[in-house]
Length: 108
Ligand code: 5GP
Ligand code: ZN
Picture 1 (cartoon, rainbow, N blue to C red):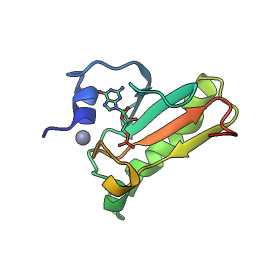
Picture 2: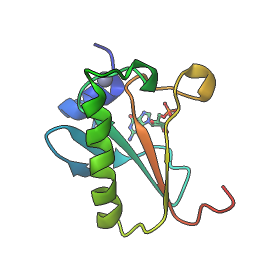
Picture 3: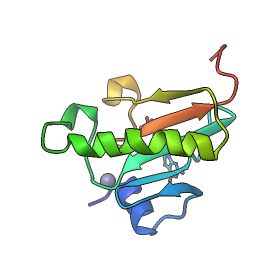
Picture 4: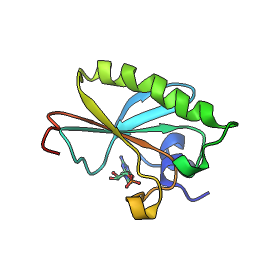
């Protein structure tokens, strides 16, 4: 499967990892749009938030369990979580991911 994020999970494409467990990987976005910009992904390939169902919902739950740990590790007290679902909403990589943005986001 030709998926950039699956390749990052397999180590075929390098990334600046900040967190990894059995189900979740988090790494610095290659094109940061905030002081801290982390991409958090489940290791399971799911195309987008629109493909979440009762069977795979644990992948999303695992991401949201990891996010507070990642934020704590990075010293983020305030942060924003963004998911772009579908091309028209700005999704460019079709492996579900959540942008974790930190820094002063009031004017963002
Ligand atoms: P989307 O636009 O789909 O919501 O977000 C995809 C994100 O992945 C973008 O912010 C983009 O900068 C990031 N990205 C795309 N390719 C790579 C890559 O090879 N490495 C890293 N670290 N980030 C990537
Ligand atoms: Zn994938």
